[in-house]
Image 1: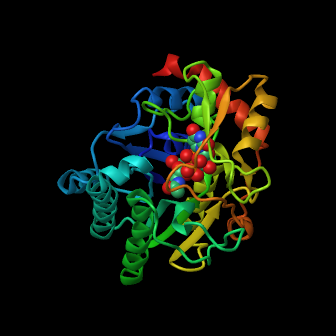
Image 2: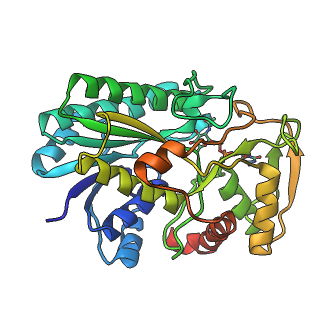
Image 3: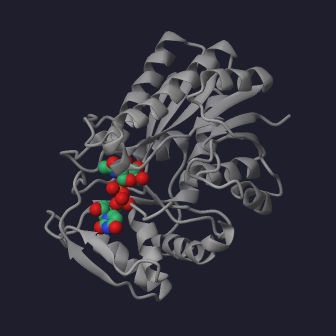
Length: 342
Ligand code: UD1
């Protein structure tokens, strides 16, 4: 019998790609999502890719009664992947309580239900934002975490702590925090991808919308950083590579291959690229010409970060595989399809 996995936020960007990979690996998926930042049509598109429409329930995990009721009705869930969260950095600065409530209370509710209904395993969707601007690069999992510039970033750090402490107090639980660097791109079918609502905050959706003529020009936030070309550096990882790491993490927990009850892994490529390099690679990969201008730095942005991926490579046996050109092309192919899907 196939293992049953709850994927919270499973209609979202990283969630939907992970559901595809889980189903293609034979797992049975049930999604919980309140659709606050995703579209129900994603379920049909997951079915088109995998041949299976995942089970789905619409509610917000902040509602503890609904969450309990869900677990009471859905017996036999063996693991959770917890993506569901609010993720707009700027909005979190304006509405901190909304972010703390949504992101922290949902985590607490899930963990309480895990204990009450004997769901032993959880994978948490964390972020490299927990490192702030590190002094030494690349960052390993041992690099000290720092206070974030945004409530969003703090919810990632605090949720890691809530998970770590809950596991320490409940030895029947095991968990993994996956710290994502910058996920980009889309599934090669161009049936699922990122669906930014309104003006995109993130670089690659802004690039593809500019190339598609939806935005007049891309603003490059800062060319006076201490980097080779002055623009900021990130570690951009293909979303399908990232999704595959979740399947590996789930398998590790289900097979009891974890070294300790709570583990943390960086998920990146190990390579840093500047904003200007990304623009250049996008133009080369797609043949599109991008209009852009340099503007002042964006508040809260760090200068540079990229991952040390040795632990994930060695312990998980996972490695980011896709070339950047292919990834940027997949983002562009998705951009050309996205309005048909919405
Ligand atoms: C941010 C969050 C991260 C979150 C991620 C995904 C922080 C510090 N970072 O990452 O936690 O997981 O979003 O939502 O909280 N850029 C431009 N022009 C644009 C957009 C971006 O030049 O129009 C630049 C940025 O200044 C940055 C790079 O592109 O140097 C990447 O930006 P972005 O895609 O927004 O991701 P992060 O800020 O790295």
